[in-house]
Length: 65
Image (cartoon, rainbow, N blue to C red; front, side):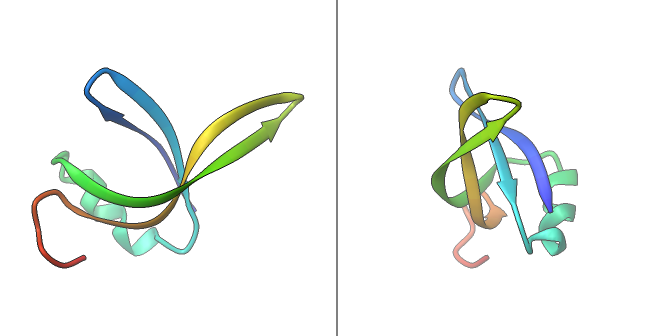
């Protein structure tokens, strides 16, 4: 499982991805990434928030994941 925050412009989103641990090294490069996601709801301790449920991650500006 990967769990981290992504930012577009000044908006920060919580993101979670299952089965994407092989993409972890892309995050360590500290470069822009492109993500494929579905918007989901996180219900934790009675608090409901929106989160991005990641489906895929790739380096920003590349043709293939």
